[in-house]
Length: 91
Picture 1: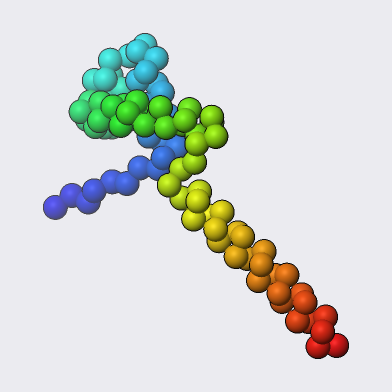
Picture 2: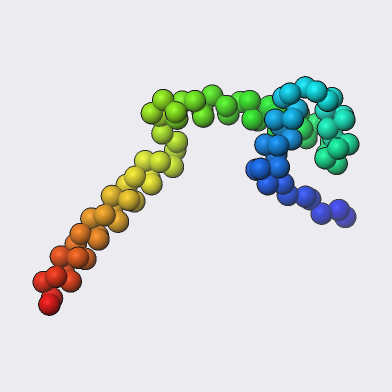
């Protein structure tokens, strides 16, 4: 049984950007990168379907993780202030 290959986001992006240039067919790119043309087509469609999100974030929108990240950073700041206060008063 063959092992499934894993591809990095950087590699997928490279392949998709080359596919978007349309200088080569998907079959040619498939041979070049040892991928099926269908796999390249799927990555390309996924990339294009998410492209709008990138520009939304650029306009001040936040990703799903950002509110949680902001909340955690706020908690860290509060804990640091509290910790510094306690250290100062223990001396």
